[in-house]
Image 1 (cartoon, rainbow, N blue to C red):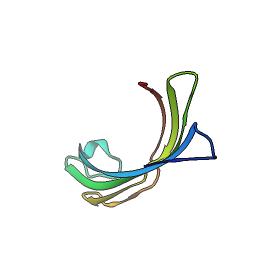
Image 2: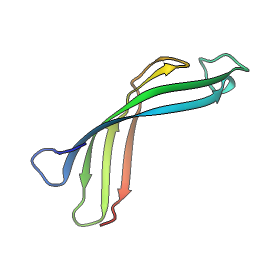
Image 3: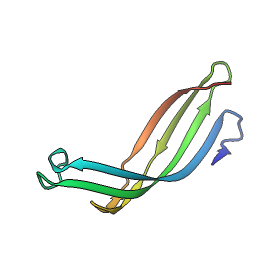
Length: 90
């Protein structure tokens, strides 16, 4: 979902959700038991702000991506985030 921000045509707030499935070996995670395989299933959220340049076909955004695992190593992961620079096809 996109909504105008700061009463401008360049800035937008966005939010959304989704899911994830992950597989890994215990040797690759600090908290996991060695020699054990893990599968996780959970839900993700995203909340961010983006800026669309008028002069050039680029977009830049900064977002927060919290997640919760329901299966496997369950818990809330609040430290996800991202910085994106995208080319816009107009």
